[in-house]
Amino acid sequence: MASLRPLRTTSALRTLSQSTKPSPYVCRRITTTPNLQHNTTVDPSEVTHFNALASTWWDPHGSSRLLHLMNPLRHTFISRCHSSQPDAPPTNHKLSYLDVGCGGGIFAESAARLRGTGSVTAIDPSPEVLSVAKAHAKRDPGLVEMMGEGRLKYLNTSIEELPLPGTQRGRQYDIVTLFEVLEHVTHPSPFLEHLLPFVKPGGWLVLSTIARTWTSWLTTKVVAEEVVGIVPRGTHDWNKYINEGELREWFGNKEGWGNVRAMGVVYVPGLGWREVPGSEGLGNYFFGVRREGEGKGV
Image (spheres, rainbow, N blue to C red):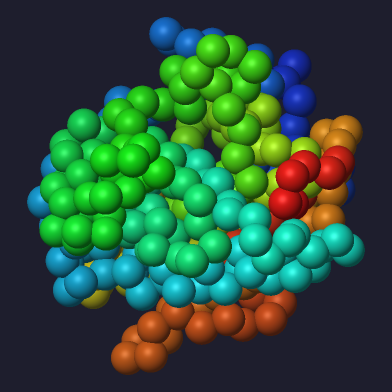
């Protein structure tokens, strides 16, 4: 049993877990009042890292291979979140998506092609990666038409710089997605706080990330980065991983958020990603939380 060990934060900061009892995982402190420069949670070193990988984003056998293989499960999990609602959305309602940290557009493109999609706004702070996303979308006449009509937008911006709902250019979305992003954020609490206003009442915040366990350290840092090399070295920082229970408790303290859903997934060589019930506490997992209230079509 490992004892609780605080991250590099001051003792006055609130944590996701208030318990002082021994835990099988190291408790990550999520800062609520960090000393952020330029009012942003974007880590410049992370942007630099992914800028360097931009050219390989759409190579199905390259450094983003695992993201391509995971994409179908993203849609599966979103569908399950919707099916868990007591009031199903009208079949004629077209969903609006905000894809935060969209990278090269793997999810954004696939979401835009769905019959039930009204619009997709995809944002990322990396200009090189956004250029790749836009160039790839232009290969599909259908996506070109959507971009021309403003139903598929790629914006080189951070969530902090996106106009807030209620302002002239701000809006809310049925689904806000955050896939494989949170484990690259140094200050997750203020980052999540910035996301919350963009979710419509009745809408969903859906994310995928990695639990901070010895298993995830072995699989993501040792095997994936060092031994097999399927992920570029330095892609992950194990100290930034967040456990499902920590997220669940954080949202449990947020008024107006509930109906939490989670799904653990495991990568099986030769088979791809597979759902493994109860594996949320081991490594990769999906997490969804619904904003209370009733919005149009949600």
